[in-house]
Length: 277
Length: 258
Image 1 (tube, each protein chain N blue to C red):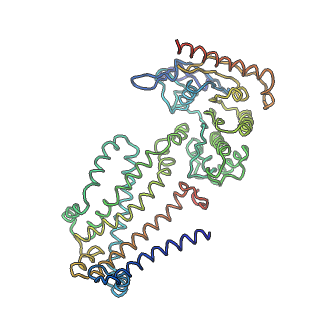
Image 2 (spheres, rainbow over the protein chains, first blue to last red; image 1 turned 90 degrees about the vertical axis):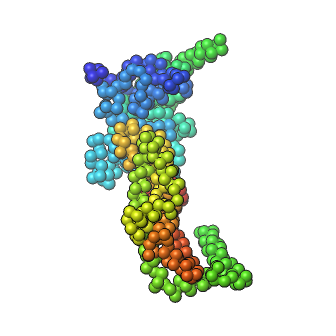
Image 3 (spheres, rainbow over the protein chains, first blue to last red; image 1 turned 90 degrees about the horizontal axis):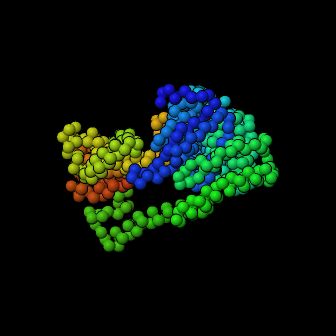
């Protein structure tokens, strides 16, 4: 275990033959044996139906779930011991209701080194400006003093993205952060997300069930399948950046999402056939 | 705003009306002041014998507040322990329920045995009477913290202490203040019980002596003082609650915090 702690540079995420099962007696396999490598600066989307284990992979990398078998490495170290800065946005905004938007977004600076060391000194000056800039980028300028419940769902989600990015994470984990939003807000946030990625180039792992979202944002798409959860397709998304919503109507784009869709549907058909036999 | 004012006038009217009806019923049925004194008699007693009542009221307020303060400190510590540790929960809860089931008046003689009659047993009784809801609410508040909020901190690799300080404790504040309002009034009960049994000072002692000499208006004067102190304390904590944990109410005019 100690020898493998030093891994080839460039792999930000490395899952080695990872398996996850739940339940002591009736074992439910959430994730069948899976290996996945994600290198520095990639934007990888995990797509698939619910129950396919895509959120499980995210939780493994986030360190909120332990693998039953296999190893999870983040930035070359075992998960939890890594020195990479991780930012995460969830399907729900999960803002703290007792803090205003500014203090919510500032929270990682209070926790994550090296920012935390100077937190009490800079919270009213440098960090405050940093938060204001971040809020302005997602169209929330001037909303720092508002409390989460005074904001719409889309605005809360923007604030949540700011919080995920405020500490310049080298690894960004997104768990369907646009899933609960309306179509227009979602597309707007896609654009913002893409721009943020182009500017700072973090490694991103995005979980989504929206093929269009995956094809628009990601450099690489892993299609997953349920029962047991596994990766069944791994393809590169070649479209040039910056992408616009218009390209989602281009033939290349449509044929890619169509192919991925067929991949998922076909696997489902096989599964239901097996189930009925 | 006029809606608010109307509600306030209505509630004040109801409270005043309660005492007026009490007064009238006593007069109509010609009830002796040894059985049930009229509110006006009680107020007169309060006014004329204020110099005699005052030191007792101060004593009771003192023992209650000190006992309450200890109750808060110890209650919060125990609540955090029980709310954040499985073992402490399993071992602590049965102990706690058992302990809180004991009538506090039965414990006073033990305190007197240990510390002598007077102030110390009153403080201790006030403390143990008010501590239970504080512990239970703090523990419940911690246990009820949404796992999603904790996950936010865990992905940032926050330590347990940081999670407790930044998520657990703020999340517990509404529960904590709800318990304080109950605990404040319970602390009075505890202090007065102890004063009644074993003290020569305090409202409890005053009422004890007054009732043994059939000075019923004075007994009721004592009750009025206790009620007034209790209401004042309750109102005080409601005010602090609005400032500190107002986010849980999400009222439109809440502007504190930050």
